[in-house]
Length: 137
Image 1 (tube, helix red, strand yellow):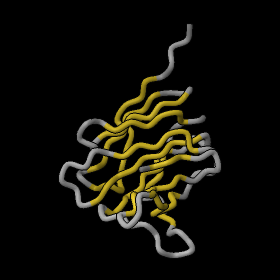
Image 2 (spheres, one colour; image 1 turned 90 degrees about the horizontal axis):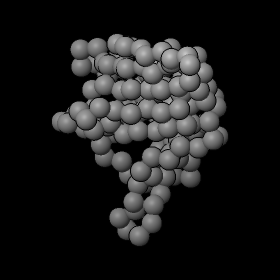
Image 3 (cartoon, one colour; image 1 turned 90 degrees about the vertical axis):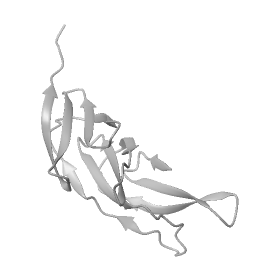
């Protein structure tokens, strides 16, 4: 389970198999403002998960998450650094949503809605393939 916070970090929680409780597995770092949205990508055959977070800082951050998450047994929970940062929004990014196959990501803010895709199956190289600007009334 992924949980976003106003403090700029997100947390990946996993159910503890030994007890009926949840424990933090990883901290997702990188935002300088509130995390407004977080989304898991569908995982059709990849050996890892992709998680996207969007924030009030205008950033969209992608994380490569191992498929075998375990609850942290340490006092300090491991921090997962960003895989890549998608830049282009000029204000808060309110939402990030994956397509059904996890190969495209739509992000939306007050400035625009953007569609992102990875370059040639390289999960660390993403580019904007389309932008829809807001319509003035």
